[in-house]
Image (cartoon, rainbow, N blue to C red; front, side, top):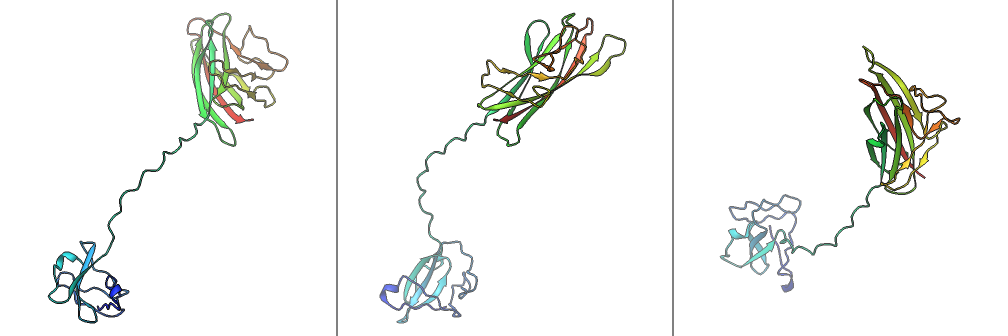
Length: 258
């Protein structure tokens, strides 16, 4: 390969002519002309000898350490790849992502000593179709004759949300020789027409969620009267001595914005 310097100012530039070959050092092999592959190198610097009045580049080495000096002409080196620059300054700290709001629902059971949360459920909020949380638990009621009361309350960590409750209760009568399971009660919405309940943001005082249970008390309560609209703040279930009455409670709460 041959490179010619056309002026004194061009001594630090190399113009490679297409289709011309160069004489390489024995360790480097042949340096390809334009369009060919560059030999592998363990160094980032090439070296060669600039010879004669035409400034012909000879004895080219892909690794400059292989050419310490030139027997004729003068030694020329050039970088294959520049050195890595200094690391720039660190950018400003990024902003923390906005905390997601949560919807929290609780199912409470009162067995005669006050309502106590037996289950707490939560979900992140933000879906355009609503966010749902659900779960199930069992409790035993031995309170006679008052029975036990089940209620639902909820709150959110951001304002402007409503909740739609669904509560399904199964009863297992364990007072006989053989336990008997039956469907006990089903509440769908905060009334019997698909209503939701607007909830507050206070964890200390969650919003009581009314339950639409229809036109009958299906768990067999003898102490609760059903209102004309079929909406109650709590569901009373009967208790029994001995093994008591077992209740499996399935709850689904759906939160929506607005």
